[in-house]
Each structure stands twice: as structure tokens, then as C-alpha cells.
Image 1 (tube, rainbow, N blue to C red):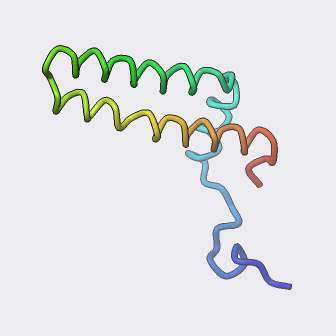
Image 2: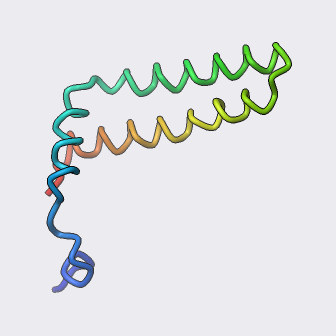
Length: 81
């Protein structure tokens, strides 16, 4: 049975993707969680200082960082290809 990868040509990884995955695979999963919590703490501090726009900007990094951590974990467990 054909898979989505067969139709979209997404079966092969690019060299840049492999390089990024090999680098991030060395990072422990807790690194991404720590970075996300740090972004939330900085956002809270900026909000308390009255810098609402900057606080919102920094605060929006947390979900992105957590998604990168999830991707990193999946690549570690399942492999990239």
C-alpha cells in the first residue's frame, strides 16, 4: 500500500535537516523544557515592568520551544527516516 511519503516525495531528508537533528539529538530533553520555562519567567518579569508588548513577544516563544522539544524527542525515539 502506498503511503503519503510516496506521493509527496518527503521520504528523504535534506542535508541541513540531518545536520540539525544530529546536533539537537545531543541535547537532553530537559533543555527545551528549561528554555520554555525561562521564556515564561522572562515574560512575566517584563509584564511586571510594564513592557507588555515585549512580554507577549517573549511569552509566545514557550509553545514553539516545547514543540521543538517534542520533535527532538520523536526523532530520538522513532528516528528521522
